[in-house]
Image (cartoon, rainbow, N blue to C red; front, side, top):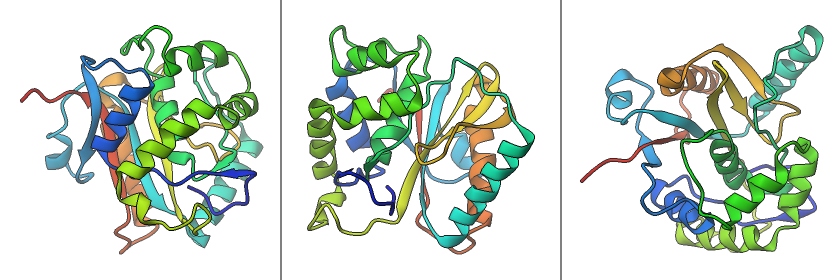
Length: 240
């Protein structure tokens, strides 16, 4: 969710695993999939131990403030100056629709799961990823912006959560979703508002949650006292 001016705006998605799981099932994740979104209640060990493994991706919601924007600007300048390696296997898209960051975060998570999740044949996710593989982040964003089916699904998901308390789509929102996942043994931060993925160094499929939470701790430390952080993980489904 961004405060930037954009050509189209959606109602924001809530950081709620139940809403997100219903959303991805409508888009093409099978009902019997072994993975689903779950809450991560803290970055401390006791909370991480509650999450079943493997974890495929982590999505964080955080508040956008002047100092977070300044940090992101400095981070980009350092990377542009010093360079970084980004695997060609990273699926990354820009965000051009206002308040679509929840959907973009979910697509970043699902787009980098390799073969762990098989989407239903002919579903939105199956068609979307087949048609956008190999395209530039800007081209993928343009395809998303024009996709009426996705907009309808996003709207339905947004209305299921508390976010439907907003009276108008143009009501100001100052929180934003980003995704963390491991691709080719590197942890990447995927944020559709940024110019490129952020390579956070060596990682593994077994340490996605721990390594992502190390980066999230940095966000929290830069915003001490702020309580509007939430974390969800795309992880092995709990059996009840």
